[in-house]
Length: 441
Image 1 (spheres, one colour):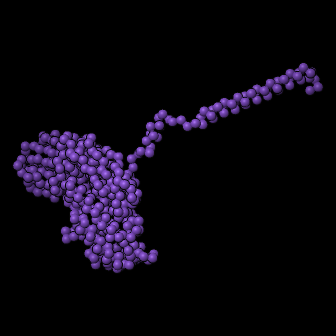
Image 2 (spheres, one colour; image 1 turned 180 degrees about the vertical axis):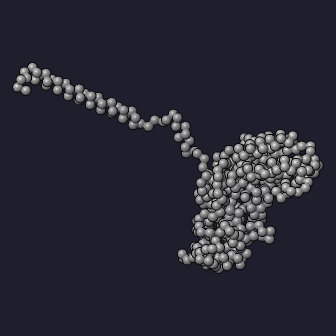
């Protein structure tokens, strides 16, 4: 430093000042731009791409779920479900709140693989765990349909009504195959052996001559002489069951099988339009959802006491119930048809190996409404047995909210049950009939 002149020292000082000035200037400018940026982006602006979806977020369709006391309303129309109307004129059905002892089994959407779950927790009835759906859709408060709006038929659909328990286009996709000479046995086997390939039940019927009656072709007739005399065939692919509607893919595969088979054997095939049939399947599934209900009565213990499995079994068998392999007791009529069932109020099933040591705080009696004819009469019989169990076990009858079930509540259940079965009858799908047993399998 001693060798530096005053000029050099002055220049060094000036340089330091300039550098510091530049640094301060840059820092000031940076703060200014940062402040402007924060002000510019602090306000929320609607995203042009996301704005449309955000504006309707609150209007997304959800499964109907009404709180107690809610007024009836009309949910949004879903894509066609089965009715006698075309998709363009289909109207949504109304739903209303009823007694919590009635439960709508869930049904899955098209294409969803599900497992059937009969019992899941306290008086929770989900007949498959779907329709549905995609999650456990047990409705709180026991929401089931009270009134139904069934659209009238449209002229362009050409649907035939369901007649009694006969197979019909109303519940099946029907293909017709005919030729002048009879089909050979081995030829028929090509289509009969594929009855399990389309995700829904398949049935075949045949005619031995043009003026003969249709008869069902069943597996045990395959070695029977005379089966080769069929000159006309009808194949029926069921449009819906408790697993949901048939898929459009399965309909297409079934049609293609029929057309390819007819081409190979020099026959003619008549196959309905796939799109219209799929829409009918969706509308049929929607109708089934509306009427697919179970009516249940819970009997729970008093003062945190328990019921023993051994006593429940003795009482159940004395009343005419028989224990099934799935862990529930069933009450059957003289034709071995299940009228109603008895299960554990708690998740543990009644199994032969553990029922002697099992204890529970409650049991549940329930009937599958669409699968039982004369539902009100059968429900009265179930109520009588529920009262018998309640008295003998020292419990009391409640709904799913553990509210004591009064005579008024029981009458309301019967009214709703009768309403549901009346709607089924008006659609020519008698409760407990062959068509109902197929649709609600």
